[in-house]
Length: 328
Ligand code: GDP
Ligand code: ZN
Image (cartoon, rainbow, N blue to C red):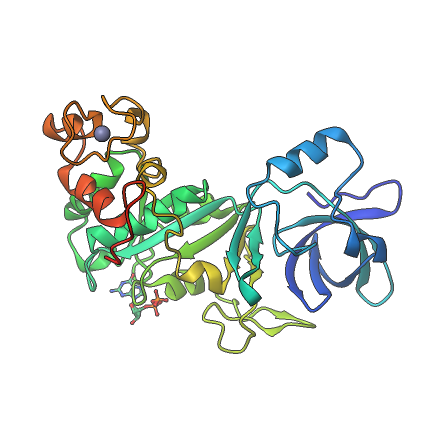
C-alpha cells in the first residue's frame, strides 16, 4: 500500500484524527500530519471523473469531515516524523453515526470486516442478540464473521451446533479460545492486511482476543499516548490499532454498541441473507410478512428453509412500513 511515488508523495493510512492532527502510518513509520489548506474546504478527492463517481457512490456522502480514520491518503514528508496530507484517496466504504449536534460523523472508513464475538459459554450466546449484531453489520454492507470464543469451556465437538443456525445461512464461524489458543492462527490469517472491527456484548473476550493476537497492544505513538483496546488511557475518539500481523483493528466508540439504525421491515429483511432473495416475491408488494396470504418469507419458514427463530427475530427488530417502532 505505502509505495514511494516519483512526486515525492507517499501513501499512508490515517490511524487517528483529532482536532486537525492526523496520525498516519506509512510502512513502519507513524507520522504526525496536518492537512494541506485547500483540502479543508473542498472535499474533492481528485479531479478525475471515475473517482468523483466513486465518491458519490460512497454510502454516507454528506458527512462533515474531510479526513477520517481509515482514509488512505497521499502525503509529503516534512522533518521530525511529520507530513502534510495532500490528497485523500477514494473511500470504499464509510461507517457514520450522528455525533456532535446530530450531524453525521464518519466513525471509520474503509472497514473491510466486522467480527461479531460471542462466547460458546459464560455467557452462552443469546441468539436474538447474535441476530441483532449480524443485521446491524449487514446494514453497513460490511463482510461479517462470527467468532465463537471460550471454546475451552465446552467439548469442541459440541460447539458447531451452537452456531449452526448462522453457519447454515452462510456466515463464517471461527472457533477460538484465548486460553488454549485454539483458532488464533485462523483469526490472524483473516486479519492480515485488512481493517477489522470487533464487536459483541461485554465479557465475551474481545479484549483478551486482541491481547492474545498482539501482546504489545500498548502501542506507543507520539501524539495519542498509550493505546489499549478498552480505551483506558485514551480519548473517546476513534482510532485504528496496527497489529503485528499487518492488519488494523478499529477501536471506535461508535462501533462498540453496533445496532440497527434503520428498522423498516423491508430494509431489515435485506439484512438477513436467507430472506433477502425472497424480497419482492410475496403476493402483496407491501407485505408485512405476518398474516398475509402467499408470503414468500412465511412460506419458506413453513417449509423449514428459513428458521422460524430467525424469522421471529426479523419481526422483533423491525417495523412494517408506516408503523411505529415498538422499542423491543
Ligand atoms: P470483553 O468484555 O469482551 O472485552 O471481554 P474480556 O476480554 O474482558 O474477557 C471477559 C472474561 O472472559 C475475562 O475474565 C477473561 O479472562 C475471560 N476470557 C476471555 N477469553 C476467554 C477464553 O477463551 N476462555 C475462557 N475460559 N475465558 C476467557
Ligand atoms: Zn411477505
